Amino acid sequence: EHIPGDALRDLLARIRDLGNATTRVIVSVPNGASYQSRLFRQNFAYFDSHSHLQQFSPTSLDRIMAEFGFSPAGSRLSYVYQLFGQGQSLLNVIFPIHNYLYYRLKRGAHYDLSASRRRLFDVFNIGMGIMLAPIAVILSTLDIMQPARRGVITRCYART
Image (cartoon, rainbow, N blue to C red):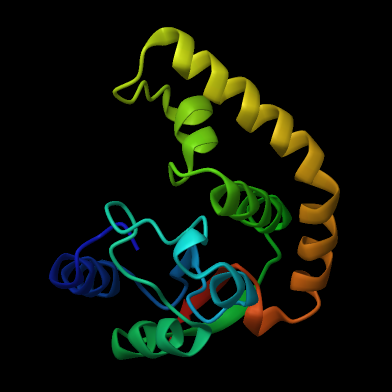
């Protein structure tokens, strides 16, 4: 999802051409057809247009992989991604800066904010994150019961 469309096709063609019958490719991408995506819409944590250039569904992911000679060989549950998606999406509903907590904690983003305002936003997001965690756990648990509708698709593909 981070790779522009033409470059993604070039990459998949290169993997196919360099691989052999035992080649496996593991893909983990946001699920544009997930319950999270439908529930949170523009607040969906993985609806991040500047870094997630594309959204896939299980069907569209299988289709593009098949186009380059790969078929599904198994899937995995990425519970941490499910939980993060639910928690950050809940925060996105109540806080105006999309994925603020993620970008502050993981990437050290400073935004165009004074230090005191940033600290206030940090405390608010962390506090709300703690308060919303039980809801995120419940939503994540419901999310994993429907594999095709999970917030994140994590699938292994084998060369066909």
